[in-house]
Amino acid sequence: MVYLDTSVLLAQLLDEQRQPPASLWSESLVTSRLTHYETWVNVHARRLTGTHGELARELLGRVAVVELHPLATRRALEPFPVVVRALDALHLSAIEYLRGQRQVVQLATYDKRLAAAAAALDIPLAFPPDAL
Image 1 (cartoon, rainbow, N blue to C red):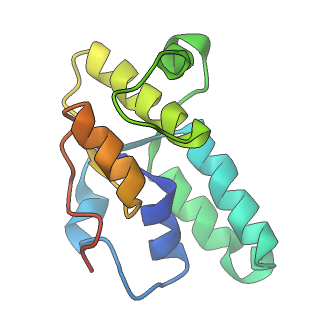
Image 2: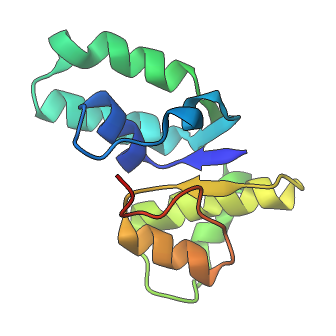
C-alpha cells in the first residue's frame, strides 16, 4: 500500500516537471482526508477549479481515505523523533494508524521534510522525494 502525500497528487494534477512513476497509479493507494482539503485549497487558490476540478476529483477518487478520526490522528499529539509541521504530523499519524492495523505502507512524497520524518519513523519511501 502506498500513502499518497498531497505533493505527489498536486504534481500529477498540475502537470509539474516532476511526475510520480506511472506505475504508482496502479498501486493500492491511500491518503488522509487532509489531502482532499490540501488539494482543493491549492486548486482554488490558483483559480484552477474550472480547468482542473474534474481531474482533481478523478485523482482523489482513485485513492482510499483515512478519515480524520481521533483514532487515526491521536499519534499527532505525541512527540516525533524529529521536528514536524502540524499537517505533516497528521499525515504521519494516518500512516502510523495504518501500520497499527498491520498494513505495510510506503510513503510517496516530494516533501523532503516529510520524507525525513518518515525515515525517522522507519516508514519506507515509494520513491526518493527528489525523483523526477
